[in-house]
Image (cartoon, rainbow, N blue to C red; front, side, top):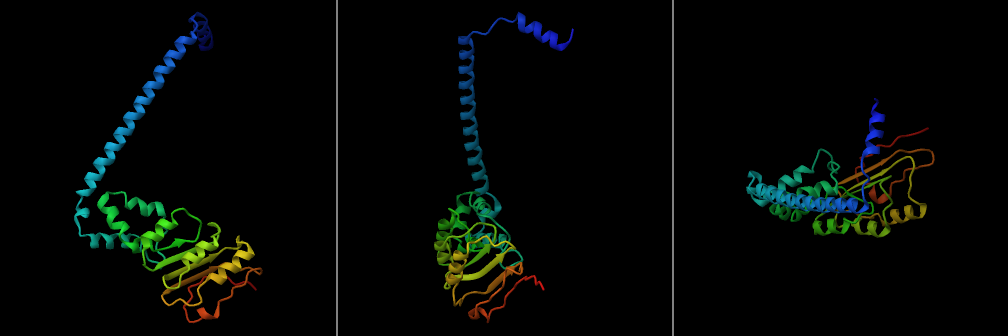
Length: 227
């Protein structure tokens, strides 16, 4: 006898399941599932509490706060002026180690000052608050979204702008009107600017123009020339 035949025989011989029995069993399963979920959440909270306690007693957590702040800054410094691509979530993860680490990280403006992207993001106000009055680096990359005029006006502050990176691809997606507004918002004077990187893949439809007020600066650029 084949497996299909056995299955048909069993299905014919098995008594029908009453609706009330099905409802009762399903209700019991739902209660059991909810109980398991509650137990999982309780265990997750307990594990988080134990991890926090363990991290608080780790050797690195016993270092003086100023030394921990230096370690955090070095973790994002990298070998280039704008540091590695450390996202907001990556930086925030370091503040979740324990309460002490969070206190040190939030109180270290330089930890949040490198490579602020000019793209709409809900975390920008929090990042600026953690920067306090420290100078910061800004990067504008084509393809990461179109920045708002308000955001540009907030970040392109000559009194605090220390590093600026401006990268354009072959297909510049920003509307022409907003492009002119961006140019107008770029500071005419930048007394604290120490690094300016302007990168562009130039095609016949794209022309690179450098404002005369930036002429005294060293431009670290990667321009591709076309005949």
